[in-house]
Length: 361
Image (cartoon, rainbow, N blue to C red; front, side, top):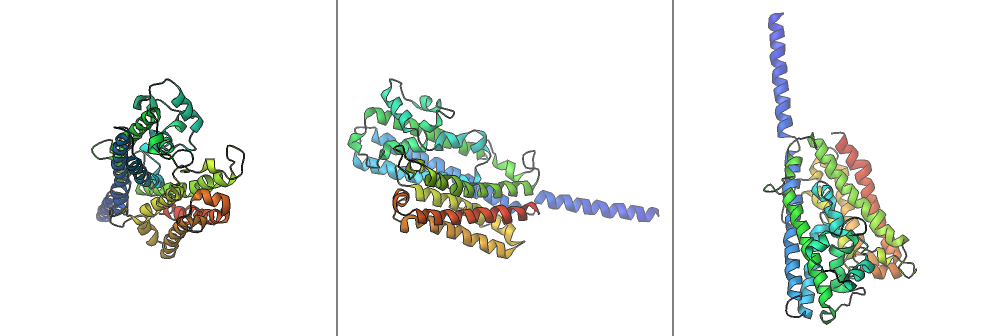
């Protein structure tokens, strides 16, 4: 009996050790590490780099008299910076939420009346001044859409010669504020900064298990799919313009620059990046797809197809890739509704199939 008990204890010890070893290594460590380091952190690094180039372009506008060439360069830099930001909205958790960075750089619609009031005031507009604009009454006065407003104007036809000294003062300060926030966000995730990435890769109080991390990632991509179809698109379909005309152009996310379709495309691309484990040339391809495919290959194939269908439908809003969202609101709302339906189907697939599969791991 004693020999049997000792043997049983020995075997239990081996099994427990093996289980602990497996748990420490992690069945999904490769996927979580790749998404953290090569998707999330690389996206934020790209965002911060491009925000710096945008600031350089805006400063050039403010030096020695603005030219059309400089205005065009600033507009291109704006669009380039906008892309990684929108491609980060599939993981709006952690520092971007905890530190309220999202509302401080991307509140919309812009409070253009409030912006004009500041321009008409005697306030000295600096980065510190813009940073101090917080809360519901303040965040709508800064960030991407304030910058967009100055670069394009209300009707999208701003000229370099029409930029006033006061507008340039506001534009530079708003861009400096934006760059400060992108640097803060990147630093919060970086291994040499706040190292939030460690929270995902190592077990802790926030994410006690790998499954908790995978659920967070899946909820992130579900969340942006839901926001695109149920808020970003639906608000334009339901809304009214300031003059009471049906159409909801005021609710359109990037209406001054006509960048809305690109915004939505990059939102869905953020889902693709996390799911497929690739961000441009970054990433080794290990993403949520690997987790899903190991349990349900058909669902994985359907998910990949639905991501592509949603992107294609968004690009075809207005009947072609060159048509603007504003144009479609006036003449082809059916194409907007068709894109909305594809994104809604994507959200439903994540919510009713992908998430339950991950929760059952």
